[in-house]
Length: 149
Image 1 (cartoon, one colour):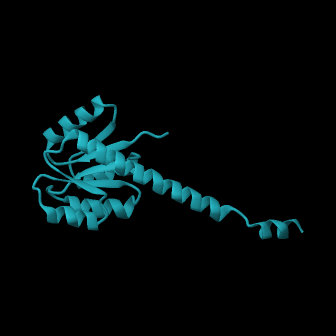
Image 2 (cartoon, rainbow, N blue to C red):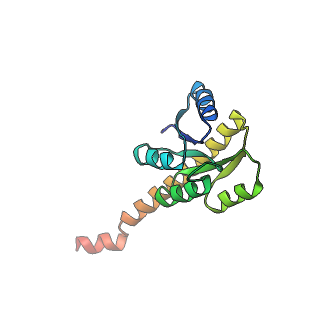
Image 3 (cartoon, rainbow, N blue to C red):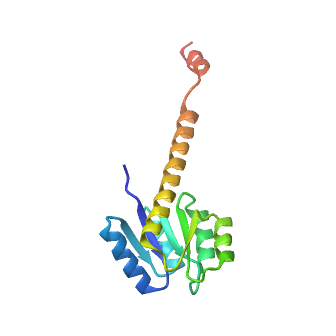
C-alpha cells in the first residue's frame, strides 16, 4: 500500500523546518515549499497526496494556491493552515475545495490525524475512479454475445 506523502507550504522557515523534522521522526515523507509558486512547481514533479497550506503568505496567498492546486491536481487533498485564527479564511478555503483547516500553532498530532483522514478520503476517491473505469471498459453480456456471432 502506498504511503502518504505530504507537502508543507508556509513562508515561515522555522515552522517548515520544525514541523518537517517532527513528521520525519514519526516516519512521514514530507517536502516543503516556501510559497504558492514553489508548491505548484513541486506538485509537477512529486506525487503529493496531502498539502498543508498556510493561508497568509506574500505573493500567491493560500486561497489562490488552493484554487490552482484543485484546478491542476484535483485529487490532492489540501488542509488550510491559519496563524490568524480567522474563521472567514478557513470558510473560504473549505468553499474552494480544502478538506479541513488547522490553526497555528498546530499540534503535530492533530496535523497527522487530519492528514491521515484526508489521505483516506483520497484513497476512497481513487478507488471509486478505478471501479468506474473498470465498469466503463467492461462489455455487457449482450455485447459479448453479439461479438461471438
